[in-house]
Image (cartoon, rainbow over all chains, first blue to last red; front, side, top):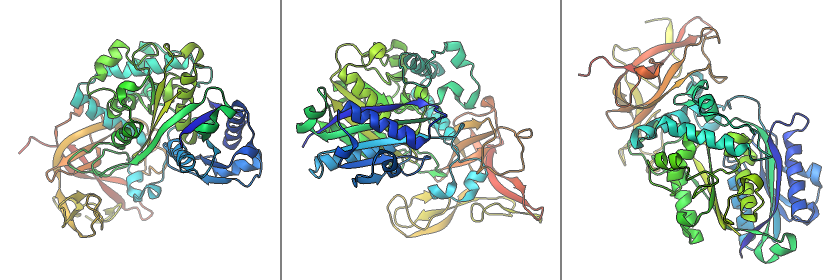
Length: 380
Length: 144
């Protein structure tokens, strides 16, 4: 059984002081149900997640106590990818006909402050100042720049593109383009990454109505088909966050293994993708994920960014809505925002940021601590 | 020296004139880990033993922590007295790369491949007024 996405709902990312995270999730669900022309009573199941805003299944208090199967998913930044993967399997297996995927969050300002014990580490690791995701991102791109000749200019170009695209996206948090000088001279956070090169924790909600492909047109005239949804965790030797030590040999990241499996299952290759969302927790992540997802060779990013290949007008537009950099990262919702944006692009509803040429196949990649990647391939 | 103790036991040999990191080695597949662990993350075996990992290596990658972290960071510093610190991975002789604070805290003092050496530093004082110490790495004197 093929799987289709027939309802898209987004509560804009950023800050909504008047609404809890749960309420933002409910708003996203209502929007997705309206888009699919259906209601909550018709939903047979839901998978959902939130890191800081309570259990996703509390949504039934706001949406209705209908008795549906509602499973909470907690997979860090890859929560959205994991929720969609679970929903995909639920439809694919024939267990259910139609259901919901939802993610929402409302984080405090500033960097996350994870607790060592929740990551299998002792307190000394956090007490001595090693428990910061920002350090890991700085160190990974630092080594990558050394190994593959990526320049600081390329880091700046990714940030420029993100905020330029955010300025074209009515639902984005950051809708102001930034100049080269503003980005270059921003305060340093974790060498070589400065303030405008990192995304920020934020708020928001996103929901999708997903169903059997043979029922899709009952809900929406332009369904988007979910060709495959793959989630992988890290292999021994993959360079990941919160690792007091790393083995001698660097192994392929979970992004590489998830991407390869997704392409194989879909019977497609990187050359078939018309528009992509790649996890851009910071600019280095987008650069490395271009290669880890198979779109270019390591080091090619220098030329790709200089030539604008990943711009909305380029050969492979990446993060057309400004990605995490311009939208912020409400952890539970972030991976679903990526899928939402690809569906918008494949429907042709991207407005000022619409990719030309009627894109047919899209790709999303979410990555989260401590080394989880989720890849989805979508087609109209 | 009295009046000082490790912040966490079993991470390094101490007190001794020449402290070494302590990790574990898998007797089945030979892979090392730090801190020591009773099972092997490479081969899934449970046949590991404690091993000294040495105290020198080369810098594999680095960054600089430029602002004072929130909890769980726990030192005697205040936002006013906080000094940025380096963070990096040191590639040890056994091949294992260990994450560590670095004494050097400016980009011009840090370079991938530079030789590094272990040192013991104070993190904070405990309730009895004793220094709680941990390890960090710093640029090594001219290589041997």
